[in-house]
Image (cartoon, rainbow, N blue to C red; front, side):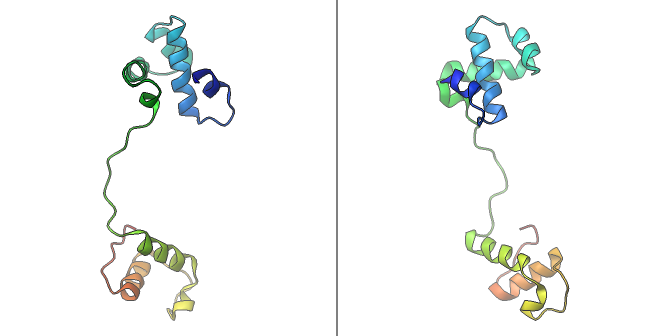
Length: 119
């Protein structure tokens, strides 16, 4: 499976590097040698080897990342994208194009709810 990831031209670069790291380790490469060969940090090689040893192929996947939770659902986002792609004059707004604050104000009016300007 790892060799297939390395050989496939459609594999994402980071997945290919992770597979190469494990294959090099299977051939007896040290962390320092693998890091030098693949132009990675030694800590990065150590991380992927450890995760593969404990979780096998699942350990090579990206872990979920933290981040700011979404404030509005997909409906509000779809409405914002549609409005941003439309000409403001279509909504009876005397502008040639939207700015972020103007778009947020118009969305708040249309949706009758406060909308964060950081959509």
